[in-house]
Image 1 (tube, one colour):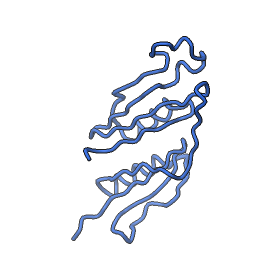
Image 2 (image 1 turned 180 degrees about the horizontal axis):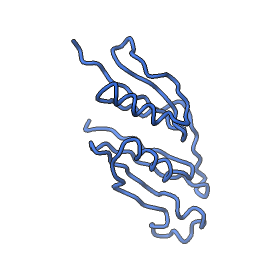
Image 3 (image 1 turned 120 degrees about the vertical axis):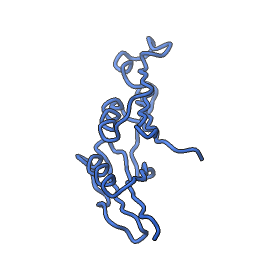
Image 4 (image 1 turned 60 degrees about the horizontal axis):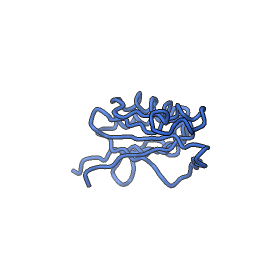
Length: 142
C-alpha cells in the first residue's frame, strides 16, 4: 500500500471544515472545485451551486484529506456514526497533544490522550464537525 487518505462527506459545510483542518495540519488546497464549475450546473438548485464538489488538502508532508458536500437535491444525507476514525500516526507526544487539542476544541473527547498498555500515546475525539479522530504516537521498541 502506498498510503491512505480520508475522504469526508459534509452536509453543506465542507469549505468551513476543510479550512479548519488546514489550520490544524497546514498545507495547501491542491484541488478546489464547486458544483458551479461543472457542466450542467445550471440545472442545479441555485443554493447548491456554490457547495464543494471536491476539495483536497495536501499537508506539508504530502498527506491528503479530501471532501465533498452531499446535496439534498441528489437525495444525499450525511449520517454520522461510530464506524470510522481517521487515524493519524504522529511523530512525538508533543505533536499528538497539539493535534488532539486542536481537533477536540468544541468537539467531544472520547478518550483523553494518555500512555497506553500497548506502547502508544493515544487519544480519540470527535471534532465539531462530527469527524472521529484517533491520534497516536507509538513509542520506539527498546
